[in-house]
Amino acid sequence: MKQTLSLAEYPIYCLEIARDETSFDSVDAICGYFRACIEAHRAAVFIAEFDHYAHTKGLPEGHIGEGIHAARNLVFCFGISLPKPEMLAFRPRSIGIAETDEGFLVTFMETPMPVANSVMEDWASGLCKAPQEVPCKAA
Image (cartoon, rainbow, N blue to C red):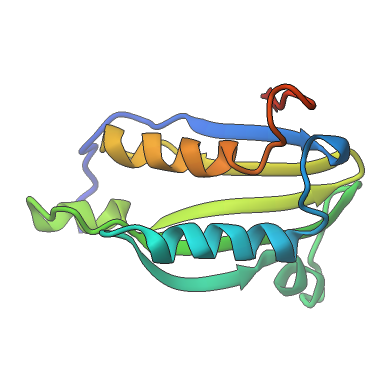
């Protein structure tokens, strides 16, 4: 097996939302919102929901950081193009949702497709209350 560097490293997008900055009150509710966004998108397909918190907590030596109360990943794929088989290494996509003492943290890795990044940013921004109420903080 050979190791190659196909594309540059990708930054992670993070949106930190205090409880009073969103109308969503749980990771379950936020997962439902994202799942609806994914299913409504013309090119996205929902694959799975992974409860990272339950998985880690169930391991004999699992460790969960202080202040984390829930952690899930929604796994999906945009599937707009597959120019070469090596691109499978970057697929599918995942949005992470964590509940912390302060509120919620939504994260995803930048994709090599700017359109997908824009869509995921829009979805994440939709979690926030209207700007005239309380603006969200991007971390």
